[in-house]
Image (cartoon, rainbow, N blue to C red; front, side, top):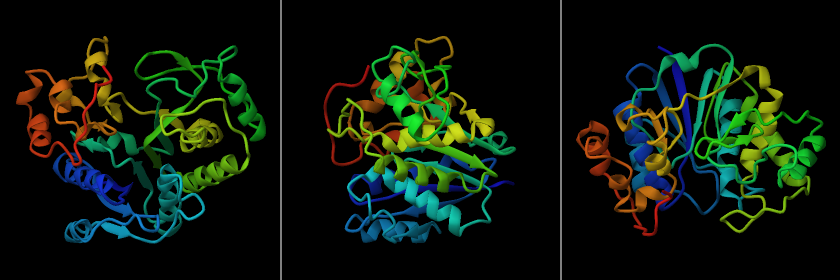
Length: 310
């Protein structure tokens, strides 16, 4: 069997709950056809998980590093994964298949070994265009042109479509599930590109929900790095890194995947909402093993409320 390294972040409070749920889902669903090891990193000072979570990792033979890896950008938690993957790639060279996975995700079916073939990096286009560019004339395109000129890279045409609203977009990728096979150095390059981008001083006229104009830079850096690995890149199948908050909307599309056929879902904050699981599932879904397993573990704390995405 292939030996897959799954790398994730766990920090205090909600993030350690998410990481534990992800680990549980891997043990329950993901390991039918692929052999794997789990590596958890807590890379920021004063953000370490509690002793119960540390004991959970130890009990399940999960590697857990509490080394302070993200020091220079400790104000930017999304950089954690890049520092963790960089460290992992430098220190665990025996692993040829590395999956960097956001902790606000879970597996619902077995990881398919076909994704571990060759020298390939897998990722998925973003859900909606956000700070991405639809090409010439798009409001964000001058920013993209500036960035790619700075890195001396050609700017790829908008030859992809967003995952949810189906708009043309230049290659701009979600960083929640990035799989590199036999591509040693890829994650180190991603971190280098991120640091170069953060130090460039280039900022867009765009502010995200976090109130910053750099809160998406780890994803933008991924687009820069993948442009350098263009001949080795493939899009993830639809069933992976699936944006489950949009399930009611996506279920009306022609290429819809049934809930119990999804392999890996990205839920963001919504597993803290008591009504979310029922919102994104049908009566038929509620009889599936996946629904029943999640129902017994949700909601995560602290609970939230509010309107769903769709």
